Length: 284
Image 1 (cartoon, helix red, strand yellow):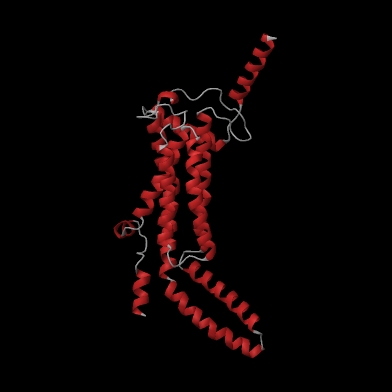
Image 2 (image 1 turned 45 degrees about the vertical axis):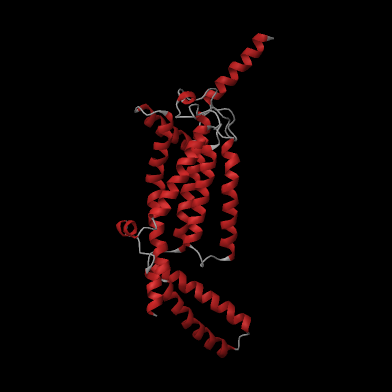
């Protein structure tokens, strides 16, 4: 009976070793091992890997998106002027065709949307470009979290136990109070800092968009506030290897958000200055 149980255990271990990781997880793992094999301890490897991936994959898109958003803000006076012109034009059409008020409103909204999209596209800031960053940042965040989960020998969703033991050195590759990167943070410092970083990012974005948020955007902002706080207990139950990645990623975004508000940085990165739109309004 004991021999039978041992055979089953051996088969499970072999299955775990032979389970093929998805390509993106394998690529992330190769990057981390490459940094670690260069001589860095695991805690520094995770931080350096986060900085490398965010700088090469999400930062260029964030800069591109900020340029587009800046153009949109600076185009606001032109769009407002066109809105007044369209009201007069559509009102004339409505009077000629005898449209009811509801039909007038529908036609006005249709033409206004078409005109705004045309203006944005003409100036290289089409609205669909605002969706590029989440389509890259979210998959990167999820894939890196799953990669580190694999390295700490935690079962992966849909794949199960892909590794029977943590990566060599993870159990003593930490720093200060979190030497064991396969264990949770006993002090709760990192989980709280993760939540604080995420919340600061939400508040920075809310402050940046103050007075311009729609009702839906306000609801989304409040939802992200709740999610930021909810992330604290989630991080408290995650291995420190994952928590260290979440911490690095959250505070990378904080620094990025603050930097993007500095005029000298915006000028150096060829982003439109955000106060141009306000000056234009004052001139009018």
